Amino acid sequence: MTVLGTRALNRATLARQHLLARTGTSVPEAVAHLCGLQAQEPQEPFIGFWSRLAGFRPEQLDDALTGRTAVRTHLMRRTVHLVTSGDALAWRARHDSMLRQRVLGTYRHELAGVDLDRVAAAGRAVMADGRPRTMSELVQALGDRWPGPPRRALGELLVAALIPMVQLPPRGLWRRTAGVRNLPLATWLERDIDPLPAGDGDPVGQRLLRRYLAAYGPAAGADLRAWCGLAGLPAAVKALREELVVFRDERGRELLDLPDAPRPHPDTPAPVRFLPAFDNAILGYHDRGRIIDAPHLGLSVAGHRMVLVDGRVTATWAVRDHRLHISPLRPLTAPEQEAVRAEAQDLIAFLDEGIDHIHLGAGS
Image 1 (cartoon, one colour):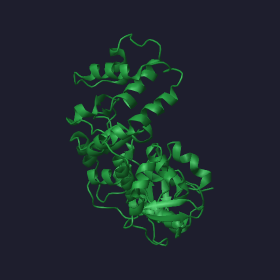
Image 2 (cartoon, rainbow, N blue to C red):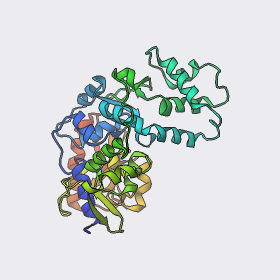
Image 3 (cartoon, rainbow, N blue to C red):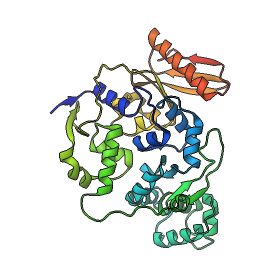
Image 4 (cartoon, one colour):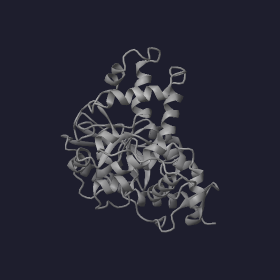
């Protein structure tokens, strides 16, 4: 069985994430291919698209959100993701149980004894008037029927688990600051959520597996679980196994992949890329060693924006006081510094925030 080294896995990830070369695909096509972008920080997907799409303009993403071809909703890992409307409708029912379990796991004591079906029915009745509401407004509209749970716990149960919701624009639009206003997904899209199909083999899970491998593979079952939050999709993996190719990584883990998916040569050059906070190119795996070194793993979940040099997380970046601050995690060679500065200049032009200086640290 072929063993894929860390560098080979890195190049496969970069190729599938459009980080080896920017693509000319549209924003909705890119959202679909990437299986969504993590988007709890509303402005971060714009940077993710800028690093992946040739000629990306912020209004392209704005148009997808206001035109309802993409939505912001709780989905994978109970995190707000930007996904296509079609994927939100097709995937939501498969995620329902996980979303409930994760909210209940967070508020186990606060929500003990609460009848989830009754809460869900009451919440849907309130939202049936088609009026967008904040989480607080929804909880307030329920009156005093559930006086025990804290309002925050009851609100998260409703908007992140029991009722499939969309976070409406202007939240998530370019340079717009807006609070979260929720509307049921089916109301916003004027289409019911797809029911789970009957039969064996987990058909929705099979589609999720294929799509995940196309954007993240080769990958192990643990990586798939880390990405979606679901319990490994064992029935889907079993049903598709004969269609997939199998590799091993250097630790001996089994890696699954689509036969014709790109797996570039490990020596393929990788350009400098600036990534947003919480980018799924890093977070979409249980074993993130293909793209970030173990001592820096904490940065990937702490909201730091990352810089890839030769395909790996090599610096963090931030904008403060009209300066672009780049903090290397190791000393950069002179050619690397030049490449980082060149890409940083393009980033400054894209951000258009009056940044007048690049500060590139020495590295540790």
